[in-house]
Picture 1 (cartoon, helix red, strand yellow):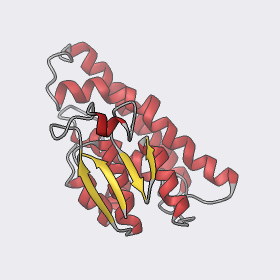
Picture 2 (cartoon, one colour):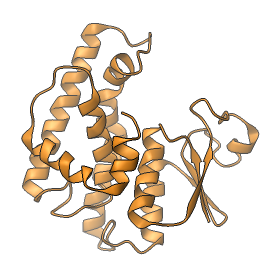
Picture 3 (cartoon, rainbow, N blue to C red):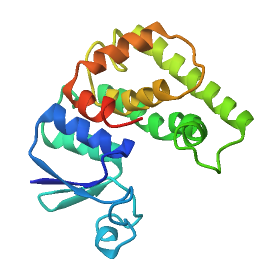
Picture 4 (tube, helix red, strand yellow):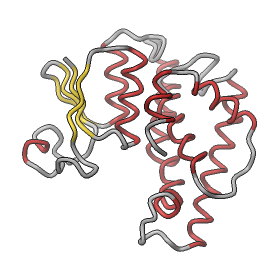
Length: 207
């Protein structure tokens, strides 16, 4: 039995939950973080010494870091449609996953904390405006790539790259700020909305 440790409102936990819906493995959820059990407790730190969610226990194999978990689960379950064996195709998918947790996330962190979380440490309006603009610029660039690729981030079919990118785009659409109208992104978002995993852990999972 696969166990997922985390809380459902976390965007990184929702990546793993969405993938599980795509693959239909049996799993159980154990709540940690986000106001549930503290991830600084020794029990959790034995799973992940840096104290972050998600973590998983797959029949005794413990792993943490959300995008690494996605790659492991897809590969271990033989889902070559989501993560091919071919080194070049696989690298094309993985580069978007790595970019999502670095440059893409950094672009929206201030705007999200200030406008959605209402974090008092992120209330400088000028800095928020710059964050929204940077976020929107990167979303527009993703739209160009989706259009060039044929409908999804890495081609004309859904792959592992669409999970982290799709959840970040959901966060962009949820920002209560003026944003450009991007038809390719809207069409892509509608395609994601047809997937049960996104319905459950994107649309209903929060921004």
